[in-house]
Length: 161
Ligand code: SF4
Ligand code: SF4
Image (spheres, protein in one colour):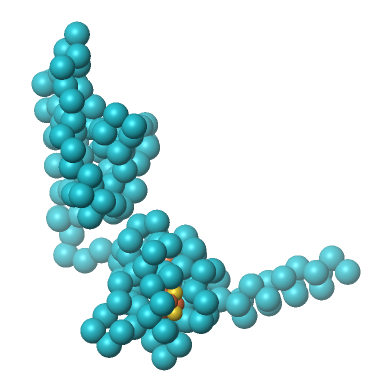
């Protein structure tokens, strides 16, 4: 009964700006219901309250505390360690075609003032989509370069011969 009258505000412009997903009813969707219940897939953004789904105030408060705790795990550190598998742009090869900007599911690549794509390694999830899609082969995924993959495959087949 509690949830019956709650209709989410139409905040699609804001949600698209932060690249956070909404379900068919217009409520925000967490990264994983059990493993990351107050996180979004985009790092550093957390959720709590009725924007998630209609819920009692006790649950909202518990969720807000969880979101604040998650934020504190970032804010309490002087420096953040990030994974080594991140995409890197060779700016001399970039034609500013925007393919990486459009295809990155996390909205990380941007075009800088010199008309070259830049990817913030602290935000990159290392999925490799931009590297696969870049028509100029201007993006390399560290630890998964062409040379490394070819060497791996050569070694694999050499061993099985
Ligand atoms: S897809 Fe490649 S060429 Fe196009 S903007 Fe991105 S890095 Fe530059
Ligand atoms: S590797 Fe994935 S997350 Fe990183 S910039 Fe490319 S598409 Fe985005």
